[in-house]
Structure formats: C-alpha cells, structure tokens
Length: 162
Figure (cartoon, one colour):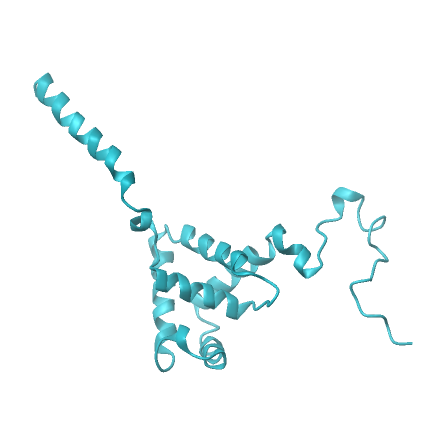
C-alpha cells in the first residue's frame, strides 16, 4: 500500500468515525421504548409506592439495561417480557392492575421474575436519594452508632397501647 492511498483511506475512516455520534444512541440501547415501559410498569407493580416518582424506578430499569450488555441476560429479559403478554389476553401493560398482578403471581418462580425482583429490590431500596421517603435516616455507624443515636427513638412507630 502506498502512502498516498493509506492517507486517503485513513482520512475517510476518520471522517466516518467523527460522523457516527451525529446519529442517535438508540442503536446501543437494549430495549425498545415499549420494553422500557413494560419494565418500568413491572418494577412499579412489584414494589408499589405512591410516594415515589418514576425516577427511582427508571434508575432500576437503567441498571437492568446496563446489565443487558450480557447477551444471555438480555435474552432472559426479552423472553420474560414476551411471556408477560402470553400470560393472559392482550398486552400485559394495557391490562388493569389486578390482571397484571395475577399474571405476575403465575410467573413469580421464573428466573425472569426473580431476576427483576432482586434487581429492583437492591436498586430501589439501596438508593439513598429515596430513604427519607420511607423514614430511614441511613446508617448510624458514622454518627456514633445506635446506642448514642436512635436506640430509643421510636417516633416512627405508633404509640403502644396501654
């Protein structure tokens, strides 16, 4: 290969590489918008909290999307989401809440459901941004431990009956 042809071909490749970011990043996302909506609804149905906005739930969906870089994990999620639609009439996400919950109860022992539930459990309740919503003040170790902070602080419980 001559120097002139090498420079010409490398400049074409450089221009092509610089042009790639112009296109949307959706090609790298593992889920369609519909699948993302299904995962969001699924996590919200597994751990319903009226006091929470969609943001903490979306953080869990993003964690699942990051983990979906593994092809086997991505296949598990996609097959699980399609089985949700198969467990009843019509699209799972369009059903009423009672029908969605019934479909989830039928598949609660499947690897798909267990994987999403455990991911949501740690992703949601391990999020310090929402701890105050539940009345959790965080770890006490940094502030001297429970013996000196909160040992007898039961203001979050109802008063005991006499």
